[in-house]
Image 1 (spheres, rainbow, N blue to C red):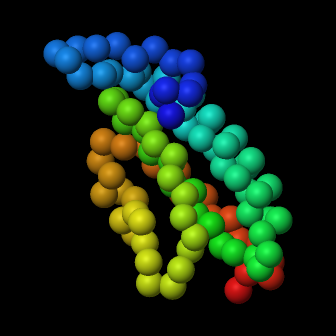
Image 2 (cartoon, rainbow, N blue to C red; image 1 turned 180 degrees about the vertical axis):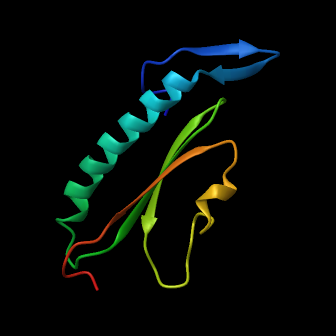
Length: 98
């Protein structure tokens, strides 16, 4: 996400470093993008459930999404296990998708 959102990415010992404030900025942009994705999800025929996973840490930020299927997880169920990442999981579930 840092390639698309204007944040400062410093380089220390050949590794990228993103400040806490810029990580928050990236997550906020990710939430806004998830809202845009939800508009598309609500137009799907047939309706489908979609999970957006946003993650940010001191080196990068990611936005992933996938169709929610029984028995499939793309993230650890215990979000506290992401010790160095700030993580936001957003489920988009149209009323007719179950």
